[in-house]
Amino acid sequence: MSTGGLEDLFGQREEPPVADEPAPERRRSWTAWALRNLLLIALATVVVVAVLRSADYEISIIFVVTALAGLRLILLAVAEVRAPAAPKRSDRRAGSDGSAGTDSLRAAVRRWEQNLERANAEDDLYSRNVLPVLAELTDERLRLRHGITRATDPRRARELLGEPLWEALHERGRRMPKARDLESYVDVLERL
Image 1 (spheres, rainbow, N blue to C red):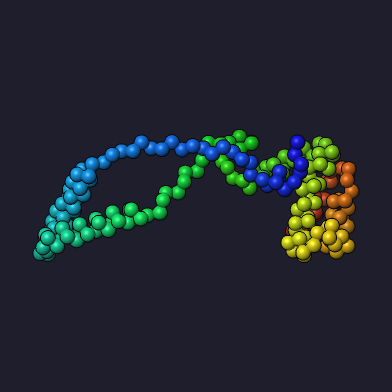
Image 2 (image 1 turned 45 degrees about the vertical axis):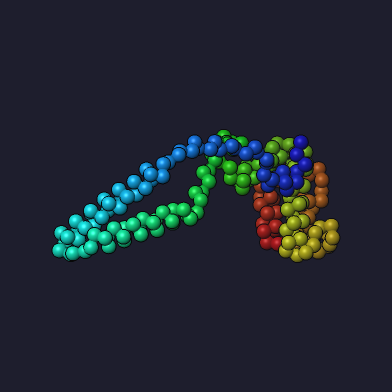
């Protein structure tokens, strides 16, 4: 059974890591690699010299070969130091509603919505699940914004929260408030 804490609401559930199968290594021959690059440079040389000669430019073939070989070496060096490819997004795990994806925030919001829907049906669930989380969020917000909690400075906390939210947090066994009341509680927390 859930304790109703922030960890239950926003916590990431541990899932076993998905093992990626390593791709089989293809052994490439050094001679085949060198021949492929030489052929690439030769074809590029023929094209560049043909285009320049058709435009009535005379250029040394050795200069063109050297320039293209240098360009190919630079491209190979850049390919060696490029950033690693971004990991592929794993959509294999489905969310609780059957949708694919692993968005933690979406999953947390979905859990919160489910808690509220169940709490609508049973007042006891509201007292056990929703109220403790609301109280924890309230204390955290007070601590971050004002340096207090409801326990350390109850008078100031009551003043900041207002009477409706204070009563909602301290009257255990209450019925689930109406949606507009919950909205007003959230508005108070956002304004803190």
